[in-house]
Length: 119
Image 1 (cartoon, helix red, strand yellow):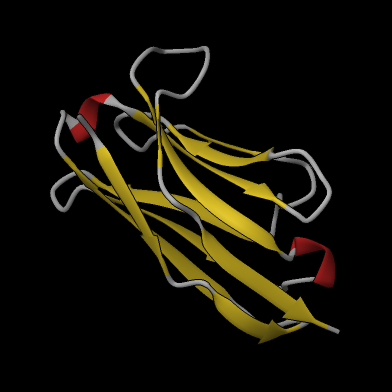
Image 2 (cartoon, helix red, strand yellow; image 1 turned 90 degrees about the vertical axis):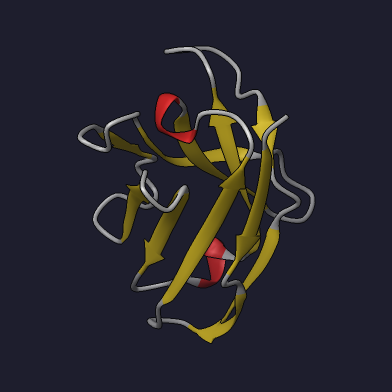
């Protein structure tokens, strides 16, 4: 069983930065695709970013491209999301997720961390 624990959320002013971290335990971290998702109040959960196993390939939602950077450290079993130039619309609960397969649904989820961007 894989456990994912997010940290680094908080309150920040628009234009500021935050760095989210996700620590994984159990399973084989380096074999998983890791992703970040977010869910704002009253909205569906949406994809934010993903990084493939080796860390060489990354994908981003158009809404965060150029502002957010996902990275992973397979030696430390962690995945990070550096968020710059934050906007009020980035306010959401951010979730870390792990996917065993090359594509399809994510298999494991963290409990989420709140990010609030004030205007």
